[in-house]
Picture 1 (cartoon, one colour):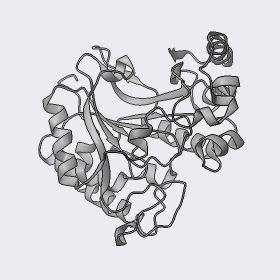
Picture 2: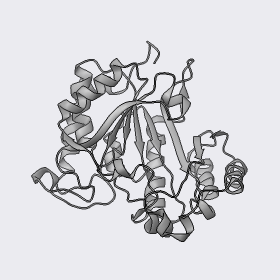
Picture 3: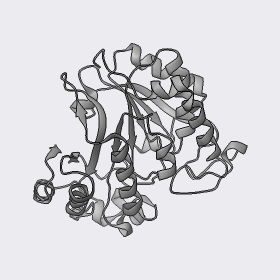
Picture 4: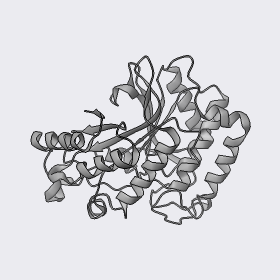
Length: 304
């Protein structure tokens, strides 16, 4: 990261507003309304939500990740922390061992903060929060400890895209880069394959809010993202992801210059083999059709 970079959260820390955000976020834990699942669990009182997470965040691990987009991973890697208990239940999840909580552990805010500082010490270009939607209070508390101890990296909010507007607004001036999935254009497909209600409408509202906060992706002279929105869209077999509809939404309601990674790495992992429509990889023809659809819709900043 360039020496001149100033992460947004430092201003909130300096004026005391970060403490206020922590308190506001903690109030959403009981009954839990942090994410659109709205499960109402008393997480502050020792219960767990649909995310199988209580008061403490569950962490699978962290590393300098070289495999994200080039503007995120750079040459030293993205400082990635993997939270367990994803608020989606995708039958084709390629990280199911992480998202479903195998080998994870509950961690205090201080322990998470120590992990963030360790990633910074390794030369990572940013802090990449994977599956953060259900642990925003814990992230904010850890961020305060880490920032007081010298954390100066941009924050990447790496989400499945099923996010609450109320929770996202607590992150304004905290998150530098939003990196949401846009998985589906069809609510029935989302319900069938990710077990959530109203995904397209919730997802689109979330992306609107993210873009309102940070705008289009900004990349510095070294080729690293410093601020803005980067959308991920995984192409699925049989056009189940609705690439054309997603692209039209981005062009018409966000910006034709929205950075979008149209991804071809779908493989029938986890429980996908039980679903006939998902039990094979995406073909080269399907991938080409998806890219052509995005271009036809008018997207100008397609990554692939």
